[in-house]
Image 1 (cartoon, rainbow, N blue to C red):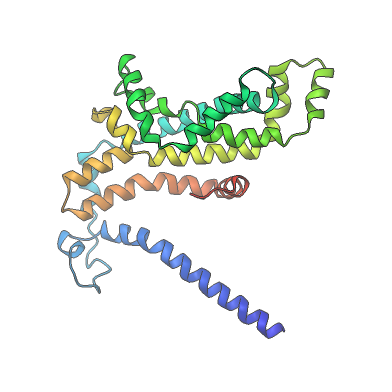
Image 2: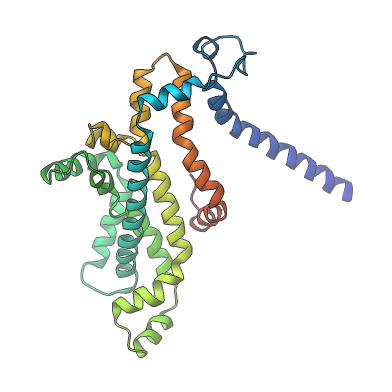
Length: 276
C-alpha cells in the first residue's frame, strides 16, 4: 500500500512538472526571441532555440521608439482607478440589492444579470458616444469609464452579502448605526475576501483590455501597454525580436505584482471560484 502511494505521488509530481513546463514554455520563448536576431527568430530550424549572441539592442531600440514611462503611467492609472471604482460602487450596489428592500430591486438585479449575459462589445458604441459627448477622448478617464461599475463585481459581492447573518445588521441598528454606517463599518469589512477577488479580476481584465483603449484613444500620449503593443505589432510585422522585447517590457510589472501579492492572488481566485 505504501509503495502504491509513493508511485502515485511520483506520477502526480511528474504530471505537474510537465504541466508547469508547458505553461512556462511560451514565456521562455518570448524572452529568448527578444534576444535573437531577425534571421534567428524566423528560422525554420527547430534546433535554434537559444540565440547565438544576446541582442540587447532590441530592447534599446524599442525603448527609444516608445515612451514606456507614459505607457506604464496610463496603464497603471487605468488599473488603479478601475479597481477603486469597481470595488466601491459594486459593493454599494451589491449591498443594496442583497440587504435593502425597495421597489424594483429584482428588476435592477435582472438588468445586472442581463449585462453579464450579453457580449461586452454591445456597449462599446454607446460608451464611446458618451465619452465623446463629454469631450473626454484621449484621456485617462476615457480608459476608466467602462469600468466605473462592474456587473460581475455586483453579482459576486451580492452573493457575499447575502451569506452574512441578519443579526449583524440588527445589532448595528441597536447600536445606533444608520444604513451607511452599517454597510461601511460592519458589513463591508466582512466581505474582504470578495473585495480582494474582485480587485484582482478587475486589475487583470484592465491590464489585458485592448479593444476599448484602441477605440477611445487615438493619441499616443493616452495609449496603454496593450494598445501600444498592437501598434508595434503592425509597425514591426517582420521584426519579431523587437516585438517580443516590447512584450517583455510590458509584462514584467504584472509579473512583479504577482510575485509580491501571490498569496492574495491565490486566495482571491479560490474564493471566487473563477479562473483567469
